[in-house]
Amino acid sequence: MSLAPIILFVYNRPCHTCQVVEALQKNILAKESKLIIYSDGFKSDKDKKEVESVRKYIRTISGFVDVEIIEKTKNFGLAKSIIEGVTEVINRYGKVIVLEDDLVVSPFFLDYMNSALQIYESEDKVASIHGYIFPVKHQLPETFFLRGADCWGWGTWKRAWNFFEKDSNKLLKEIKKRKLTSQFDFGGGYPFLQMLKMQTRGLVDSWAIQWYASTFLKEMLTLYPGRSLVKNIGIDGSGRHGGVVNIFFTELSSMPIKVNRIEIKESHESLLIIKSFYKSLKVKNILILIRIKNFLKILYKQLGF
Image (tube, rainbow, N blue to C red):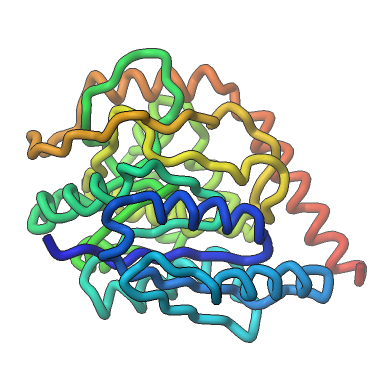
């Protein structure tokens, strides 16, 4: 099996980064995998010390067949870093596994990702493989498909990434034109369209909503595990795009996910379970807080703070 290179995007959280790497190293396939680390440049002197601390740590990393480090001299921001980093690596290798510095993985993560990437590599309808699944109340199938794409521990191929569309206005217009608003929002369970609107207005900077919208409009699917192989440890308030949000916290699966080829169609049963989870979140208040936070950021910048 040809293993996909792993991209890890890091910034200014040395403790989180260390936990992510140590979890990766516990995967059997780690020693056979190439790890490529993108370290973003510091945005201000306030972040400089932590960025340098992260860079000091990543230079000591071992346990992989090769570790390549790209240190940016300027601050790209998360969205630009991921879009450009994934594009660079996927053009070199044809496929990739993507992690951020707050995503701790199960010891079974790499086996699941690489197996699924191999099985569905030539299936044009499949956009990506995802390692995280929500802490839902009902049992899900071992693996299943949902329309679109996701962002917490994922992998894809060049053929799918080629459909990534950076023009949020174009994506928004197409969703409205085709009257897909409700479907895009999981039946009104989560305001993804509102996030896309905020993206067009510069109130959020999210590559993930563009990735989801791009694949959703192409009617492509993402494979999910029935039990989570990824845990986000960054929703503790420490991240630039974070905040204390326990609703997405999940325990890592204590067992591997069996990856067998399944029918390539959206799982209606799983979709209903995810819709129910989304509706239970009542996330409108979270979006309001995000809008206020970003409005204040813009205002402070205009006032010279």
